Length: 405
Image (cartoon, rainbow, N blue to C red; front, side, top):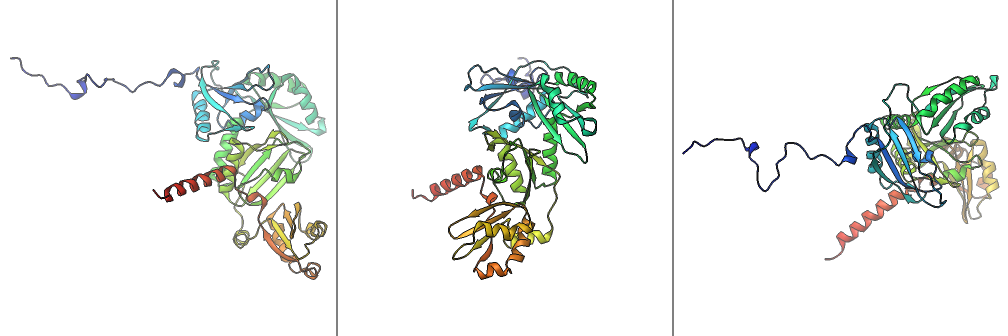
């Protein structure tokens, strides 16, 4: 009889368990190969712009964006976003998957990885975003820039950053990196200084990262029409009380500072992934890292009940005109709200509301009318829809647990 040969267990193949020397490979569509850098966004509603879809992208750089033609006006379409690297495509896909459902104009978007166009090798200067300077002393105006950009439409985004004096900056993002070199050459011929800038999607991701690290309180909103009013805009802001809001309709931008970082972060996510629509357009949201903590005295006033809203209550409530006259000298007002038993004055800044409360509590005019002044609830403190749904879900689970078996 021959001697028995001992073999390691790893070399013994079981007839019931398939033996493999490596982990199973993912499907071809999920392998991060070089030509697998395209994410297809399905179900984009016809009224949505490509720039609104690209607001969702917080990684990059992007090589090319392709919009599917829609011969039927009410038909949904696909938008294909091709990145330079599979890592950037994966980061985008993981981000939107983590925040599902992603809503656009009350419709749910789907995101899948596909095999798209092979992007060229990434170069340091490759970008679909360029920077130029608007110098009104040289007649290099925003109107002239827009005229020069018409042959290259549709654009992704044109943003003008107001500077001091007569000089502003303009950042232009295109749907393809291949467009940018031609535009730079054309603008330089027209007298503009023009150069490549960091891809706006990559910039948005880095900005959010810094805002979270610094515990920022500020969200920047843009994309609303010039005729938008401040009450219209604040009606779309939810999730927590505000410290202040700076509204600049001529520039198409609003700076919103929440009292608490967690409320700012929650509202930013809600605006980005669920959407806030104003006058038929989806607002663009950016989490701004340029914020700071508030003084202890301010936060102590908040803990004692201070808000941006003052409530004027009396047996015969004061008229909105009287309340506005009494309050306007202490700071800008967002709105005056009248009710059956009281009138509310909402300031744009909580510090102005606190100063008004201290002074008007001693007002002889209001005292003679028997008016009692208290802080009211900030209109923006209404919970977000996602928070309401989460609370209802928890309430339902508790009811199920308490129900007799």
